Image (cartoon, rainbow, N blue to C red; front, side):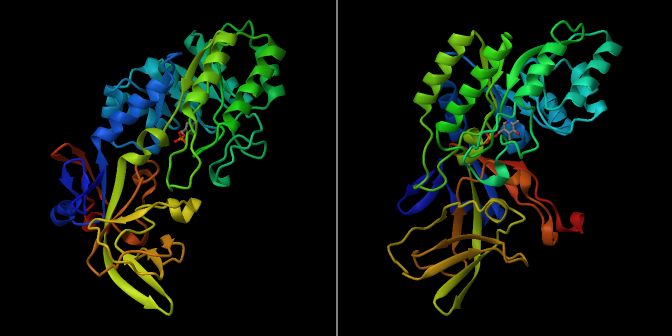
Amino acid sequence: MNYKNNNFYIEKVKAENLIKKYGSPIYCYSNRRLVENIKNFTNYFKSFDPLVCFSVKSNYNSSILKIIKNNGLGADVVSDGELKKALSIGFKPSKIVYSGVGKKFHELKFAIKKNIFLINVESESELNNIEKIAKNLKKKIDIGLRLNPNIDAKTNSKISTGRTQDKFGLNDSDILKILKKFLHSRYIHIKCLSVHIGSQITQNKPYEKVLTAINKILSKSKYQFDYIDLGGGMGINYNKDNKKLNYLKLSKSIYDFSKKNNCKIIFEPGRSIVGDTAVLLTKVIYVKNNQNKKFIIIDAGMNDLIRPALYNAKHDIIPLKKNLSKNSISHDFVGPICETSDRFLKTKKYQKINEGDNLAIKDVGAYGIVLSSNYNLRPRPIELIIDNLKVKKISAKQSLNDII
Ligand SMILES: *Cc1c(COP(=O)(O)O)cnc(C)c1O
């Protein structure tokens, strides 16, 4: 995605033409970027050949999932619905892992009957339910224990999952207790220790701390796990000032860790695979001058992209037609929703913007469309994917009549 002669292109397609043809707002993905992200991620860690399971909750568009599956990844699911979706797309059960604190009895039973690779257990009660099901089916079930290592991922509090005050996982002593209790179980085989401490992590330190925490459990328990599931959480560069994860260093530490402990590694990345593959194309409805600032009112709202309102996320907003003018006055990019949190970005300077201009909100591929809603009774945006010159519609526009 880049400018050519001051016009913004997604692969070989001029973004402005998409708005002309399909209206706005539009989620628009780049096939090439997606495939490159998968290749890069796998390459970083190729020295220990991990099982990489894409976190379906970050984007479950069928066409996107098919591309991800066809490029060799498995699926990480956190609900019955995501599990069924992953199976329907054709992800092999042997490449599906299932996490979540509130899996119901019938959901566990379904997952067990489908022989998925791993259920990551988050409480002792859940494990007891699994044992019940296993007994009934006279089957031995492979499970993972999700550790809550009490580590701060140094990310937004709402997407932090590995601290004691967060609802996820089991603490050290619970894990040690369960390992002992199920050591000779006829129905439960504990084959994995899992951790996922949060999302949009942009420093190596939290991951290093996770490895240390796991090492501690391994040496205390003397238990041989076949797999260690390190979850996802790898951050992307939403703003140029973001810190960046050092993948080479991370890869080296995990390689050493896996050799030392003789275990295979699982990852569950979501954001780092799809985050920067999409933009949200939008049109300026009104420009409103207010004392010493301009409100740029766009036709995408928090119902289309809730991350800024929910997580204080800062997504860059760029014009589809670049010019050299500069307006040195505060710009507030806001949506049409009747709520003050419906704002996307504040900037000090921007090129001169007119009503009817077209813009792109960047890096919306993860936790974008999946968190969209019909709030204010607005239809969800359509999704397109660009492959070189080809434009493919990958979700239908909701008709206003239908939602009314
Ligand atoms: C959300 C989630 C992920 C993916 O997180 P990203 O930050 O998108 O990589 C992985 N594992 C579990 C258990 C999750 O809940």
